[in-house]
Image (cartoon, rainbow, N blue to C red; front, side, top):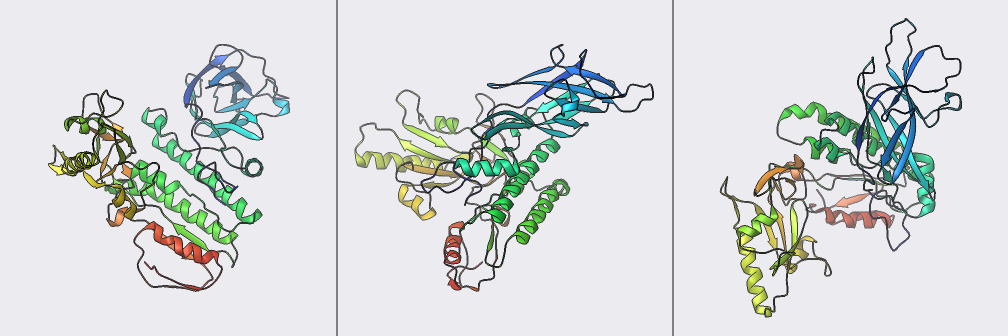
Length: 446
């Protein structure tokens, strides 16, 4: 059983994958308008709000459209108009219920579509509600759709947990649509969704292996990581949430279930971003799709596969070209510091040592940057260097204590550990023996 990963698999394994946004987030500004909204026996003053001058609010999210009635409420009949709450409704009649009632800073869920038992939905937040209605702003986050498998599993999850909430809107944060506080609220909602799904599976489904992603510390690390201590008071909220959720998991499992807590990585501070295209330009190397390109490159934030284009070279000619390119990359320096920026440049046979090689997708060379550098960031046109997108990153070969992962095992089974764990793949034999349901001696220890 997997609670985060690939949506498609060959083994009919129930899966809830990470989902990508279907729409962009947006901020909608509202103004008072006339309307015929009906409250049963309501004496309080109220005003309708709109973004288009009509009696309702018209919203467009990609291919999805939504009409809402949004009403500002003055709950203190003292003759002074002070609107401090909104009612969100899908029609103009409150007696049959409404979607939400919110104050400034609060969120509400909004369903956009439901198809084959799967919901497209988003969460919205009231960013600003001036008591005199001079300024009313609602942030509508990106919409998501559950990409799980199979449909029967997704149906159970939606019934118990609701629609997929997706990850935090980091692009919206970079565009100043939301603050870091709102971004972290989204991160906690995402983690809460995964937590509820995991607890449902533990309590209701039979499984041999449940993989559960708990993303909150990853989010905090990307957004806030750094060497300065001013971030620590905020970072602690991520650890408190993790402790609380782990406590709930421990209460849910029985003596026949082992709990493995594995962090895939630590974090390194990201301080400089480089344009991969301009690095190769400075070497006189043309990248596809340029005419007569020497190589094609597929890059991530801090690594890249390099594919040599077929230029009718002999096998020895190809080896010589790649060896020369490898040396250039290994010696490439940040001109501002005079230090090399690339940590590893590996041929396919070297990739195998680090479990990085795939015979159908791996490049002729694979490169990985040193800790602190990224290929992902804000780089001005014609510039080589810029600022990384995230302040914290992972995936380096960095061996510093901050970059290392964490592993802990809670089990009633007797395990004897003999050697030191060096890589995350060393944990697999432990999982394999636990699945065999017996006491064992393991070749790795930490």
